Length: 263
Image (cartoon, rainbow, N blue to C red; front, side, top):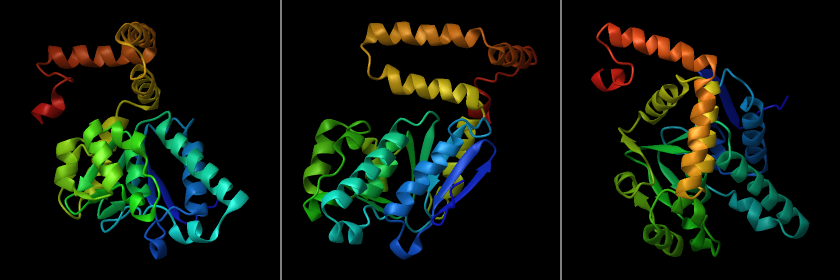
């Protein structure tokens, strides 16, 4: 089993929590943190006790992006290995089989913002700021991660300029889904992740697969695929149990579908 030096892991009510914890580098992504995130996600991928994953830094900063001191001193084959490691992290998070939530406070520059964009949903503190700052160092930001959350014009503006935006502008353009008060980003990110995890790992894994695959299909293919998924789910014991619970609630004058809205 991997020993974790820069990552604090825990599981709470079905949520696997990955807290980046390398304060000397403000959680910049170097060799070790790349490897530890990949290893932790691998350990939870088939663990039914984990139905969703929360990425969080602390209430002052999320992730400072690339470990620039590493990029400054490596070249050749070592640089290729580091780039391959980054690619493995990105594809692992992008294609993770369970829903992922990023809880971002403080600055999330460059690769730090990209890590949040690889997650399915981002919750931001009011003190958060996001920017594709790699251009400031003659590097490229990760356009695809921005494009899947915001429109092409905004994604290109951020890619070309590297200029940051604050949390409320990030909410307006769709880069984040929710803005919460300073000092509460972990609490609110965990709240959302727990809501997702209530469905259980069996269902969240299926729903994540739908989210990953249907978005790359044409509308006819997506409709047929999603109906096949529905047919599969209806035949599972999980559906029978949830349906019975829902019918009981309706007969008592309640509705599971609207319980949180009403609460």
